[in-house]
Length: 369
Image (cartoon, rainbow, N blue to C red; front, side, top):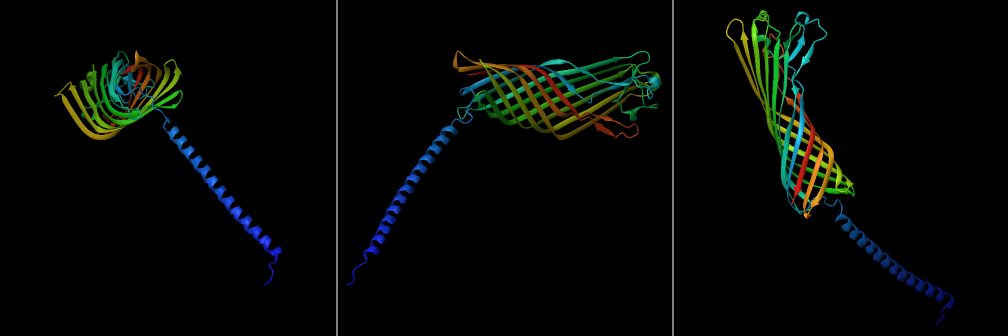
């Protein structure tokens, strides 16, 4: 038997041992890395769970019922209500000092009441609000000398020749009643240490009644018209979706600046009517009536800004909040009253498409118990 060459065998044995040792060491390193990875993964999962549990924590009061109320002092405005042109009848078409006249709106009180429940589930709340306002606008023109008023609501095709006239004594009176009812679901939460947001959404219903009366009197006899009286109705009933968000910018000691914004789309029906009664110098009076109903979608925007103070009462189970600020409402295209624009074509009418706005001060309070 030939003798094994030790110079060849020993290096081979050394390489095999080294390879085995390397594989064993590498396996230990892999197990160690996998263990560290699992530890890091578990740590990240725990951290996420802990963070996730406090992301946007609830800023609402403890579960229970709440009641709210507000007093608003508002002034309305609405375009498309001009009822005459004050001018000099002798040079009506040449005068550069003609001006339109419209009724002036008064300031009136309105109110808003609400009730709801704060749930334990993540600070949700479910509530309902009712807003009500009655307001009016009045104007009267008693003109003498060279001044008189040219009516813009008269259906000219009803008049005997000449088919226009001027009035010395004219008046306009608009009554508006507004009711808004909504049901909303929302949640108040902390965005940061000093900022609270309360988004919400729900359903809304609206009823807006407008009655507009115009009277043209003391008309010169040359026009063959003694008086011209109008009674118009512009009523809307509808419902739809509402969404918004309330914000509180915390100042400390219970005080905060609040800012609210709300928008709604409502589908409903307009009930329109126009009655005109003409008294003539000769012949029977003319009693003209026209009615119309139509379905339209109307939009509503509402925003508010002011100062808020809140504090627990006697213990943490009762909570009170008071706010004072400025509030604004915009009802898009609410004035749908139509007028005749041609003295030859009775069917030529246009709608005003005027917007109705409300603005003024508000004081509100809410009690949670």
